[in-house]
Length: 488
Image (cartoon, rainbow, N blue to C red):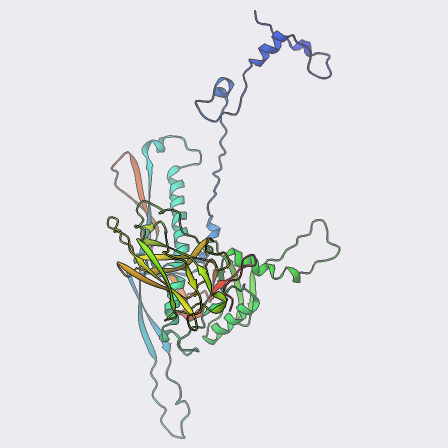
């Protein structure tokens, strides 16, 4: 007979242990224990009786709605067609002819109008849930509602990224984002109005590795004021914003003595300029340090380029490398299309840039890969190493270009420093830019062809910038903890 564990043996024992013979202890070891097994097959003995505890709150490790800034800020207006036309009044009349002689006839002046058009683009995602999934008791509420919300967030992320960097020249189905529309507007003299100059390049400030500072904001304010605009918002990446904050740490003043519960630090969320107060908006989707993927990001991505032949030549049309920037660089190239980005192909050689006259540039001849199904390469992304890192260093995105067919040339004159930041500063109101919506984000059910339900989430819109000279691009913004290469 097995010995019985008697609770009375513990009575009168201050230590609470009592005394038992060896047989009793052996029987106690057979007692059921909960354990830590988390798989069904591994749950034996007492573990099989343990009820699993699953937190009812779904933990989100991706972005949140509050990370979406530009999309939330940009004014929304209604679109009524897939082609949205609008008129621009660029000038009230010519210069001169204002003063006349007594009794004279003033000169006839004509206002200058221009008709432009923007094309609505179409976005969406398909979501699917099996029928049995609708019958089980889910851990976090309705699975349909959860996937609908996840689909909306995924679309908002794509929207935020495209509002900054969308380029229909490289992917025709994409709308033109802030960067593309602003640069096109700067080169169009009809958008200058009576501002100075008529064809502006000063709307792109190149810091060449310097960090954001108060003089930069003041210079931007001057440019915008010269074009009858006022700075209200600045979109920049988190690192550049953090560096700007740290510039004020040494200027901080704290009450002495400092209490145990005092808060230290300095966060700049607004900058006062001669053109008004600028709101700083740190946007996580203004990516810096973008590197090439290790492999194609999905099975439908275009075929990688066959090759990228790298040579160094005398400057032709690009900016050209300057003397402090001479050195050795390596490149890699990926193909892009509406379906994604291919695996990278390394450049054929190291570009050793040295004096060949006043300055130099690197030429890359890209040979297109084979067509994969119906998906033809529409553009390329060029990645390049930093001078300070050497030819074994990481390669960062420096350009995104359109495909010219079987062979595409790219000239690199070090216009864009690899891995550096970009900021956009300008006037945020409906007279300057808007997001034209043909349809709000909607849910569209699909036919049932299997034991699952499917639906599309769709969105039709396009951003329109009426006054591109109401915004300034600040590029090649450096970081405090990063070598400032290319300073000239």
